[in-house]
Image 1: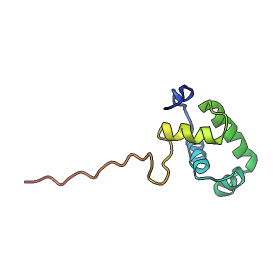
Image 2: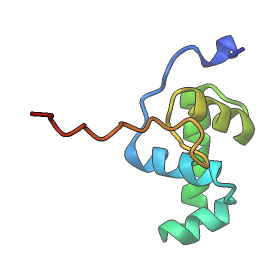
Image 3: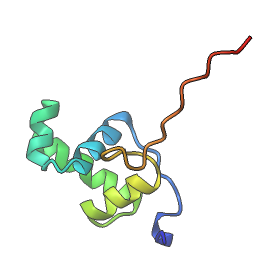
Length: 90
């Protein structure tokens, strides 16, 4: 059952969504900084802002929030795959 804490989505930038995906993949802030070629302090600030916007207290809650709102896809779990259209039969 989802926590009432997660009842509303948050408005996040593309960069924030990118960082959430990297957090969900288990990267540390330093690893995220290296991957995105930004400073660790910038990542720290992004994470802080994301936690505030999503009303989550830590990385685990953030990943749970992201899964609930379809912001991340982990190992084909929580993914919305749109089937290819069928060819029209004549």
